[in-house]
Image 1 (cartoon, helix red, strand yellow):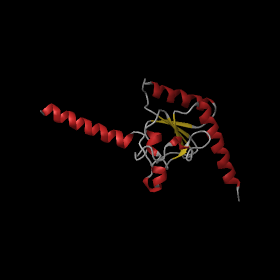
Image 2 (cartoon, rainbow, N blue to C red):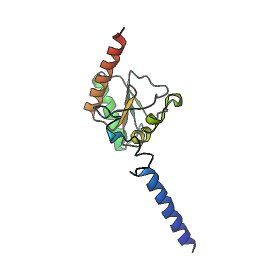
Image 3 (cartoon, rainbow, N blue to C red):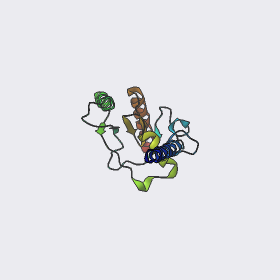
Length: 154
């Protein structure tokens, strides 16, 4: 009898999890999905809240550090390739968002990026999970050009 109750409890928990986190019309993660095209730019990067303590003129590559896992190795190789191209990069394993700069539309994008494939790359307030080197370089160049144009406007 006890096993039957445990099985029933596990089924209910699984249903709640599936409803809340799967691609369901009312799920938290399906709202503001990165793949909806409305929030992503041409390179697939989306606007996220301000990251505390991060210099936005640099590219931030996020994944576990000093780790043999494939995700961490990809992050290390990406950061090294960016440095080789003269792009300022920071390699880190944690991100903290400034809660004062989070609105609901942007907040709903956080899980779709932060719970996605690693590494996560931030460039001038925009982020993408597991981008290619070419995508990162193109996004950095576009963002730098936009920042230069904004600073030269009187």
